[in-house]
Image (tube, rainbow, N blue to C red; front, side, top):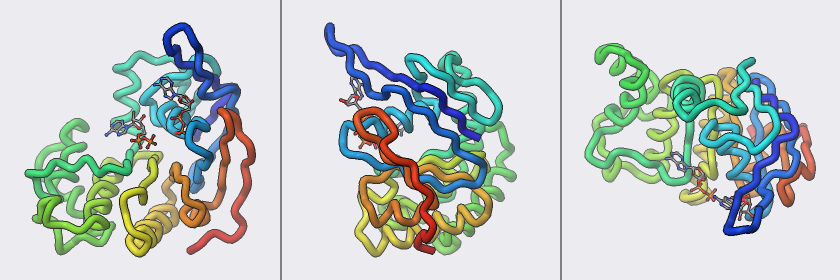
Length: 229
Ligand code: ADP
Ligand code: ADP
């Protein structure tokens, strides 16, 4: 599903060049559950931005779902993001004045679905994440864990091929983080492909494969034989 070959990303800072990714080659198959780890500055966000089609590499090849997306225009990248990728961030980015249901319906507006269908799909997805009793609540009427569930439902409602999560438990206490990891395990069992960035070892142990970055390179890439759940 994801084929990254010799990916290099450099940023220009004044006259200096910062090499955020040096030569990263990774393949991720459909249905995998991968954690990306590494110290601050090792290139995790840069790699996620490239995998998520938020940014393009300086050089190298990125093939996503059999499409070469290495050097597409911003518009084409946006289209791929909207149709094929669901994002979960550390900050939930929910619309504060809208209900959980309305927040989850929103991505379907861009997908051109009719209102009745948007409502039905959003309701089903909220049931899937265990929020059947909270659909009419606004974000400030929900707990942190429930808000993250709304954000996860919003990421999944379009049935994307790939779910990307950047520090999905970064703002949550350990009990609620565990609940979110249980939900991720269910999402994975249903056949979704998950890639998450985390700096927490306990969180990474839920994934079935752990890739560690160091100074913009893959330091190790290990199958987790004994994932939690
Ligand atoms: P991580 O997410 O692992 O903390 P990043 O991908 O954010 O790492 O950063 C990798 C390297 O690239 C760091 O040295 C960082 O300072 C640099 N970097 C990241 N984003 C930018 C940017 N927009 N401009 C310049 N340098 C950047
Ligand atoms: P970090 O991993 O350094 O803590 P964040 O988790 O805030 O950084 O964001 C990681 C990257 O994801 C950022 O470089 C940013 O460009 C992108 N990002 C974060 N939130 C959004 C969003 N709502 N929409 C699009 N891109 C986002």
